Length: 199
Length: 199
DNA sequence: TTGTCTTTATGATTCAGATCATAAACTGTA
DNA sequence: TACAGTTTATGATCTGAATCATAAAGACAA
Image (cartoon, rainbow over all chains, first blue to last red; front, side, top):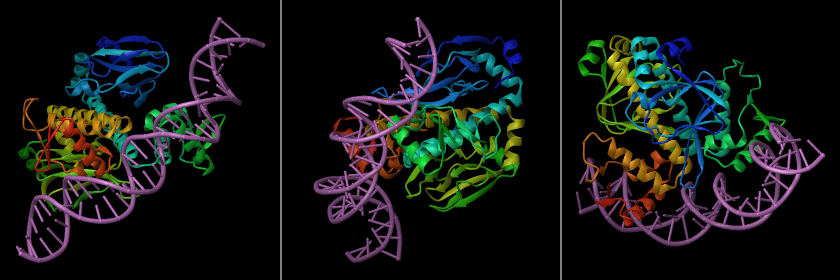
C-alpha cells in the first residue's frame, strides 16, 4: 500500500467501479498500479466451461496486479469489483518512479510479492494433494492469520466469505464446500452461526 | 542471479550436495540466500500420504528460497538436490545488504518474484480447473518459453522432465501423465522420440 | 408483502482420474 | 552380462468429488 498523499502527488486518479464491473482482463497489458480505497476487488480466471478460480481478494488499502509491472508479461487473470468500489489508478511509469525514489516502498512491495508467493505455494500444494476438508481448514486459517483485526489464536474469527467464494478459492464445488464445512462443524474444527463460518 | 564475484566478495560459500540430499525443509527458518552453480535443485511438498508436489525446479544460475528472506515466514516447502550439485550459500543479512547497495539487483529480484507469481497463478488455476491434457500442454509451453536456449516458436523443444516429474508438477498421477501424453502425441500436439517429449 | 435474487442445503447419479497390479524397456554399473 | 534401479507402459477396478436436480431459507427492493 502506498500512502494516499504520495499517490495524489504522483497524479493517481480515484476511479469508481460498480459491483461485478471489470477493471482489466486476462491477457491485457499492464498499464496501471491499482490500490483499493473503498470496497473489494477479486482477481480470477475462468476455464473453457466457465468454472471460476479466484486468485485473490483485495480489500481496503490493498494493491493488486503489480507483478506484470515488474516483469514483462500480460495479466494472468481478470480483476473484478466484488462490491461497489473506489480504486486508485496510477500509470505504470509513475509507479516505478515512486519505487526508484523510495527504496523503503520498493522493499515493502518486494515483501508483498513474497507473501503472495507464500499464499500461492500453499494453495497450489493444497489443491494438488489435499482433500476438501484439509484445503478448507488451511484457507480459513490463512484468512484468520492475515486478517487486519489482530486477535489471539484462541478467539473465534468470522469468515466473511460465501461457500461459493470458498469453493472458487480452493478449486472445489460449492456443494462439496457445504458438505465439508458441515463435517468440520461436527468435528468441532469450526463453528457455524447464522450460516456464517467461525474459526 | 547474483554475479559470482559479488557473491564471493560478500562471503558466500559454495556447498556440495549429493543427489536426493536436502538443503532445507518445510517449516525451517530462512537463514541463507541460495544460488545454483552446478546441477539442479527442486522445491517440493509432501502430503500426509506421501504424495509429492514440485513447486519449482532450479537449474544453473537460478536462485531459490528467497521469498522468506523478504517477508517474515518459514519455508513453505523443502529444497532437495535432483542431481549432485554445487550451490552458493550466502547469509541472509549479507544478501539483504547487497540488495540495499545495488538497487538494480534489488529490482531484478522483484522482477524474478513477479515471474514466479505468474507461474504459480497459472499453475494453480490450471490445476484447479483444467483437465490433464490441458495442464500438461500448458506446463510444456511454459518450460519451452522459459528455456535458456532461445528458439523460435516453430522449432521443437526437448522436455528434460520425466513423466513422474511432470505428474508432480501438475498434481497428476504418473499413469495419467503417460496416457495423456500419448493422446497428445496422437493429436499431434507433441512428439515422442526415444521416450522423450518434444514440443 | 410480494417477488426476485442469492445463498445454503441435500439426495441421487455419474465419471474421470486415482489406484492397483504387472511387466517391458532402458540405464548404469559391478 | 548380469543385476538392481528407474522409467515407461497398459489393462482392470474403484472411488470421491463433480454433476444433476430440487428446494428451503434468507436478503433486499419495489
